Image (tube, rainbow over all chains, first blue to last red):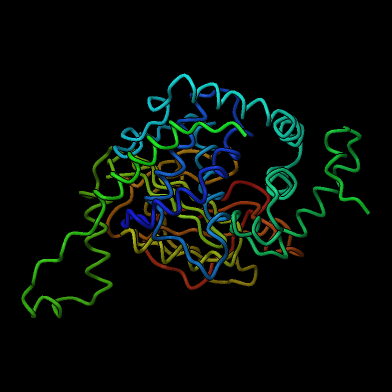
Length: 179
Length: 198
């Protein structure tokens, strides 16, 4: 994929919306969202050789990359490889795109609120809950994203939900599985 | 759903160009004897070391061609443009994979899991942890400088479980050190605090 343009194009078409959704749930600025979207795909191209089909769906692998890119952005570490500068997302925006990004960001407001409230959970518990409850991954896919075993992901998900039960926040309680 | 279609199309075009530029060039024909000059692994490791690490003992962060991001089961590895390496060993199942990947990238690395029954003396330190470490990432990742690794030292990474009952449930710490010899096992002597291997 990282060296085959036709294969990459199919991959891009299949996953653009998912990446856009992931990013717009985690930032509020259309320019940053465009940069992060581009950075996720550049990182995917550079890391394409690490994908192992037998370990799960490409979306989970891509979410793992997206999580790293977003985390890298948050800690403001330099990520300006020659490649990412070349594809720096914001310079590709026109007015209609900016409006579309803003609409997407607005539509994901509820998800962002939930993510913000989840920030009180320990990182390793929050990460599983975030992927399952907000991004809609299965526990197995979330485990793949995080590089842990499904059994570990299930334990962490259980613990995260247990902690939520101790937190009366309505936004977090909404994540409780319905019995 | 609103879609930034212009952006999507322009980004696709640029990314496809990027991938085009990464197409492998046809390998030049080499003399047959070259194939037997060195074992394949040694050749690859040596080439990677030259590429990623550069001249030994340079007291600065050495640039790497591009950032490397590796996400595999149990670990995450990132090499930043300034030569800082960030490692998250999340599960003991990732130890061997992390070791393999670091060696593929040219680092003489040994990754093991804290062994409470280990009686072997800790190996001699080649570079103090405070020189090697470049900090801790936002999510507990261990960050270290490749520039201070001597060419004859081994990078030692040891995973210590947070909870003995849940050994796969995340590390309480990841010890990292540059050592002169490879130990057969390793016991972290101070699991409650920051490890200082002797």
